Image (cartoon, rainbow, N blue to C red):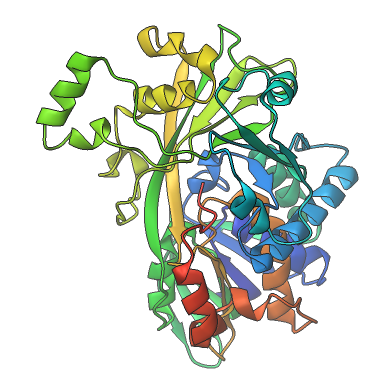
Length: 428
């Protein structure tokens, strides 16, 4: 079979690769763009997205980056006639701490914040929260989207602009004057020749980088979520995405606590758990489902082709996250003894650098680029990430944060020291 020649080959058809292709085709007017993935678009980690967005980050660089992405989401929502159901309910950060001065002081400028420190006002504004919450920080610029619908809208835009897809697995990459990608498809192996390669391979971004002769400082954490039909109506349909900022000990019975404490493999469940339990309604004001998450897994693992084989999957996660969420939303407590009859237990990889910032920009000086390490913020950051990657590829003017989000930051010792010293990496 003859070589297939294109200008730009993008490896990975998750939300990052799709967004890069969209901005290359539409803003940069590049017509010879090919998306390559062994799976259907948006069917791997992007299919497991929590579909939330916020501009709340502990560093101004990430705040600027996600503000730009939300600007783009707003524009696309208007252009598409609301195709991906974008809401603006904000984020609620709830705590039993009596003093949140340090938390608020650490929030970078440009973030719309309201602080509620009166328990009566908290109960009136956010009636579902536990009565012992002493402070609530409401981040105004946040909400949720349908990531799948956003991806489908972008794919249709790419198709109309002349971009194409190829379903196949990239097995090898070589380069001389141009890149040559060996792609295994259902019809056998084909070769794709490209001037530019964009590595948007999600959890497999490290593997593709190795084919290009580059080692990326990325690891993968598998994080889980559940969604279920809230037949008890425990979560109000207008409740913002809500996060418990406090570490917690799960509310086991005395007998359960003793049994857990005696088992070396389960002892951790009887001890203090980290903060970050979060929940929100799913499906809009007339929906019945809710989503719960808790990114407490800290064991890095190698990404699996079939995520059902992921070794860090915790089959007890649904009970654990419901117990944790019940301390934030007490009306959920009945679900501990009577689990919801209809629920979905799923998860995906947080592909991340140590500092939990993305990598977007040149891989080297020969026409290879990366847009990856989007951790748990792929849906919310995809627009800015895709736009930034397209700008790098085409040599346009870059935003102020561009170098900080590229491999160039690995040479900035002062920045890395600052980021690695921070206890808060924005991980949810």
